[in-house]
Image (tube, rainbow, N blue to C red; front, side, top):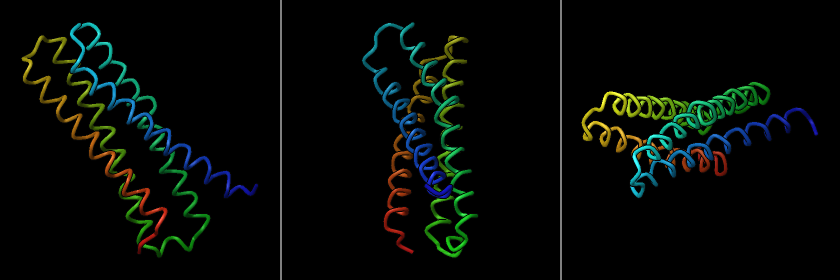
Length: 150
């Protein structure tokens, strides 16, 4: 298998792993509404933060770098609009991942300071919005890669 194909496999794998980590984080945060024990909620928030920092952001960044390398190798893609849109979507997804991590850190800080429940709930609702937007961006990226509409 040529190096281009291996890079493509690694690129797709990194993107899928980043999306898997994002989905896992979203499921963990969404399932908290059913948990009564405050300690379990705190542990799940810490786990979601760990997943975001160690897996989601890093895999999305790796996917972006590998995509850039693939584009440099295959120079004809630079003139195609779908590639620019896809790269922009990936950068937005990395930004959302970083914003999710910031919101999770805020939730941890609010809990440590025994802040008002409203602040914690506001940060959690932002996390839900980030998760939904991340899913929509992932679908848009998939659409761009498969159909290459422009």
